[in-house]
Image 1 (tube, rainbow, N blue to C red):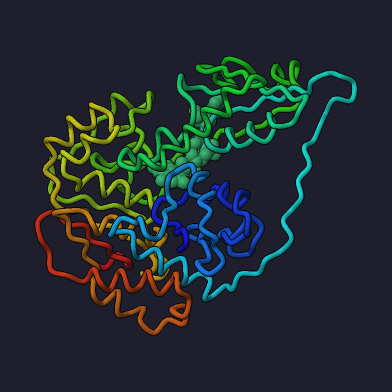
Image 2 (cartoon, helix red, strand yellow; image 1 turned 90 degrees about the vertical axis):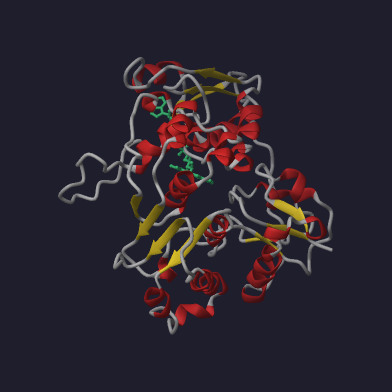
Length: 368
Ligand SMILES: Cc1cc2nc3c(=O)[nH]c(=O)nc-3n(C[C@H](O)[C@H](O)[C@H](O)COP(=O)(O)OP(=O)(O)OC[C@H]3O[C@@H](n4cnc5c(N)ncnc54)[C@H](O)[C@@H]3O)c2cc1C
């Protein structure tokens, strides 16, 4: 028996440090870490202790005999990774708890931003004896895009906030919400009271295309749309025209798939998520029947992770349709010898199907 990492893996690597046989890869620092879509467990080395499953903050690890049917494919996905990257066991990195108690004075650190980056920084800092942390966020609520970015139907991913909650409640951490650094307090004022300041404010602006028509009515940055359906206080009163039948999404990363899922989902499905009421009310009357996802490069370069495209393809009443010529164009690409790329291609090839009612079309070269 073995444990298996499936859809929803957030790559935060907390499973790696608890694995007693060091059989989870890639590790932070491994060359594959930055490009891996997720982490993987070696089925041959796993000793079924379940430590990783207990530790996983987003519930993405399963006992192989206890996997929901639709995730069975991840057994193969995990094994495939080790067929290409055989497990090499190295000595575990020894960590020693640091202490900063030289003159008995605490080291005071201000962290600006309570998103994942800020929370992980607070975690590391507040674990050191003798450190006091002040955490600032301009919003009334913590967790940044883990709250206001991650899709409302991805509750297991949002579970990461339970871990962050434990971190920011530590006795040596003080939180200040509704405080915008740069407006209510300056960095130099923070430095008057702290030894160091960590800036973890995320990316708060849109990536502009710089093309004519970008600002026409009906064209919106996805950041705004996502913030609106997630109830971000800056975007509660935004409005989106959902009366048309067809939406085009430019770019095919996981956020594009999130937005597509929200647009083609049955309203009953969304009602059981934590989507903002105003967005539910608007989507209830939506006329959208088709979402076309357009990307500048081919199917093998698609920015989404395979597991997220699979999830979109599994939605009831929704057809995932790829343009046949675009799938065929990639069939002789030398990168198909890599399992992760092969899977991406196979999934697109399997999506060359006739249309049904609501549908999502992935057009990789923007030719449709
Ligand atoms: C739509 C969307 C969906 C996503 N889905 C997933 C997913 O399913 N899984 C996944 O792993 N990742 C997902 N991500 C990515 C993930 O959310 C980000 O990588 C992560 O949130 C970045 O963390 P961060 O702390 O750097 O920034 P943020 O999460 O943006 O946090 C920054 C924080 O800083 C605060 N802040 C900004 N300026 C100031 C200031 N001047 N003073 C005080 N506070 C300030 C903000 O209010 C915010 O709370 C998604 C991202 C988006 C946009």
